[in-house]
Image (cartoon, rainbow, N blue to C red; front, side, top):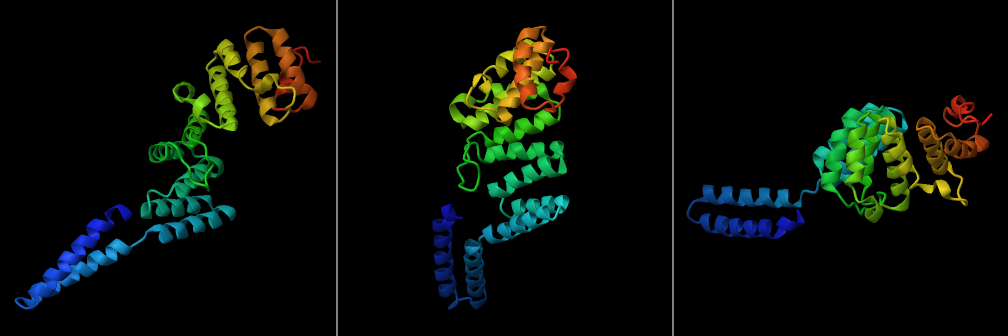
Length: 253
């Protein structure tokens, strides 16, 4: 309420002065004005943050105990008390996606997050400008809405705005969305933008890129290129996803 503090203060002063003056002529009306000034004073000092925080903290306890729907309820109450609580909004989205696995219910909250914080800077949230976009693309992908995933990522300035980890995450989702749509050559083009050529990295992200790039090549008939990518994955982990199903087709065994 800081932006209204001057207005509230002015109203209180005027009402108090009028109330005092009217006490000499109409005690009843003067009393009403003083009471109104008191109500405005109390309202102007009300801070919803502690109430919102209590619901948020309760939600954390419930999530830890595995009562995810109850945690969702507490987070909704936190947002009803203080709609601008980005921590509660982000936590609500992640609980619905990661715990409840209800991506349909999470989707509207991702839109609310993007609208409320297109460039979140809270220290307690990942400081990535496209955090809301990540939330939304994850939901859309899990819902099988691959055209919407492609549209959203392509219209987002990920190369300029996003952190390196988020850039890779969105690049991978974009490539996989094209793959799921049957556009294997386009999928390969997109996945090549990821860290598949890195010689210094061999983490899970690189494995994901190589795996999907190898499958995109395989599906588009480029078996030599497919073998190059899938062989690196197969050598690192023969149980990675369902690579064993493609081992013979790709010439890995």
